Amino acid sequence: MPSSSPKSIFHARPSTPSSFSLFSSSSSSRKSSSSFFFIIIIFLFFSLFLLFSLLKPTALHNCPNPNPKSVRVLWDHDASASSSNAAALSNNINRHKVMGFVGIFTGFGSVGRRVSLRKTWFPSDPNGLQRLEEATGLAFRFIIGRTSDRSKMSALQREVAQYDDFIQLDIQEEYSKLPYKTLAYFKAAYALFEADFYVKADDDIYLRPDRLSLLLAHERSHPQTYIGCMKKGPVFTDPKLKWYEPLSNLLGTEYFLHAYGPIYALSADVVSSLVALRNNSFRMFSNEDVTIGAWMLAMNVNHENNKELCAPDCTPTSIAVWDIPKCSGLCNPEKRMLELHQKESCTQSPTVESDE
Image (cartoon, rainbow, N blue to C red):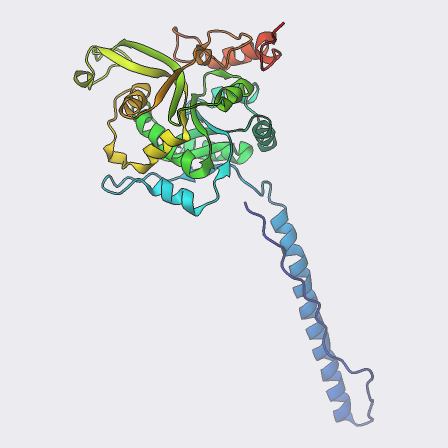
């Protein structure tokens, strides 16, 4: 809630004569008495006005968070309309400047994951988020859509009010809509933040923000960069499989090079190209990581493969830890996140490995 500047306080007093003349006549006495009561009424009126003026700014300044970090972003559902609305929005607001923006994808069934994250590497209060941003140059927010379940939406609003660390997208929160949520995320992030890189991460990975910061800070000759733990593999054509691809006939038998979904980063030039296109001009595959990979294949981007973004355990150089290839994230993340945070190799190892 933005703080308001206090209203000016006006000190007003009734204009009164320096002395009163008392007359023996009853009419004069009545006039004098009436004038006296009139003055008293005026004085009380201005006293109440002064008291109201003093109290109102105090109520405004008692706002629990004068600079809220959580926002809601609307999605353009009109397929024929230009989705450059995000670019237009970014020109009309002061985008917050950071080196990198990291959106942690989460859902309504992931309350336990967020609890574990806030107990480990993700700050649990707005001041902690600010300190992490100042230390790393990275801003972090949870990214979530919407649901028709009113009780879940109410619970989310209570969590937003408590932690103030969300960006809410006007996208139905469900797994089948993940490619749409991802596109909406990059457009919203670009509109709100002026960053060199925009990172998409899942809420079931253990992250070292300090090392992610160093990775993004590297000098690169190519302005359009796609960073991730890259992979190839067979296209899933069996409808019974989790990662079944209905549009497999467009892909052939093997996927092209693309990053694993739990974490990857796109440079600002790449995201600005996504922002400039209409929402309905993108090919949406069933899987989000394949969808992003297809878009990157169509662009003149540099694929930067970094295996430290998919480390199976904490090491002196690991950036993101998750249980590859057993799970697409940490298996049992609520428990594993806390276990990893207890390990010295995860929390106490320096940002940069010693040369000694």
